[in-house]
Image (cartoon, rainbow, N blue to C red):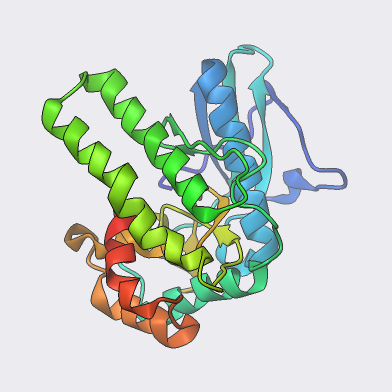
Length: 263
């Protein structure tokens, strides 16, 4: 978030009832054209809105989404602007915020998924509601790999790996979470927790978390990106989360589940 454009008179927005958007001095706005743009901006608003309800001091307040009167095919998302420092957040504070959302939201949805699509960049997540976590994760992974195939074509080696992933790996690691007397409750996930989406506020030092791609899922799935060495989060963040939230049963599968979620 490096820009804070003023609200344009040509914007046609759906403002929440009773909002006082014009009292805000500066804004952040992103936009995209076409049907994909509409879905992206609507998803951004819905996703950030629900996170703001849980941690309002750590999420830029979502203000509106809509389209320009002068160009109805261009869609935008508008929120309050925060000046931020590009730095990896401190593990304890950051992890405690994420754990707070997971704890407070756990069980608030009976199913896994979300009420509309959200996008990772311009790639839509398959958020269709599922009764089991294994079913939701399988469908979501199938969707992502189909996007890959549509872009680059079939690959024989990848096809073999996909077969093993869906027939062996996912059932082996996720099915035990919900069988043998065990169960998990859906909680609200951000699903894109890397340092580029979590930075200290330059004025208050509060950790600001943004660009969520929300859905209701297994809480540990939010930690997958922390495994990537390039994000400089890793073991300290994972250990802190385990201290605060514990580990789902079977605990012996924790590291392998994390490797799966890192995909």
